[in-house]
Image (cartoon, rainbow, N blue to C red; front, top):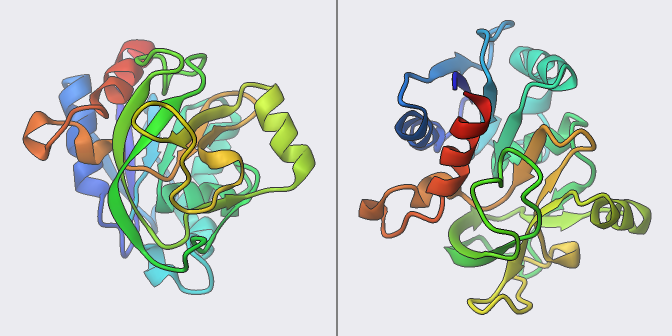
Length: 226
C-alpha cells in the first residue's frame, strides 16, 4: 500500500499518522504540502488532525480551499480511498466530500481523553480489520467534534450503512462525549471510499502509546489496498 499524508500549517498529527501507516504498510509514506497541486500515485490519501490554518473562520474551512485539496477531491471522486481524522474530518465536510458539519462540543469545552467506539460496519477498507459491533478504545482531542446533519441525511447514513463508528461506553452502551447526532463518531461517503472520523486511531497504534486498538484500521487498509 502506497500512502500520502497531507500537511497543512497547523497540522500536529501528521507524523503520528505517517508512522502508523508505515508500520502497517512496511513502506515509506509521502508527505504532501498544502500548497502543492499534485499528489503522487498512491493507494490512500490521509488528511491528519491538528489546527489547519489556525482554525480561522471555521475548523477546516480554509484548508478546504487549499491547492492540494482540489486534487484530494479529484482523487476521491475517482475512487481513491481518503481518510480524514479529526481536523481532517472537518476538512472533508468543508470540501463537500462528506455530508454534515462539525460544530462546537455540546459542553463548549475542548475534550482530550480516551473514549469507546462501536464499529458499525465492516464493509469499507477502513474498518474491515475490526468485527461488526466490536468496541474499541480510541482517543479524542477536539473542540469542534459535535457532528450535525439534517434528519433526512441522518436516516440515509444509517440506512445505507455509512455510519462507521458510534460513541459508546466500555460495554457498547450509549455514550456521547460531544453531543453528536446519533452518537456518530465517523461516517463514509456514498461510494465507501472516504471516511471521516473525529477520534485518533493513530494515537493508539502501538502498545508503547498505551494501547493498540488503532492498529487494526491501518493493518486492514494495508491488506485491502496492497
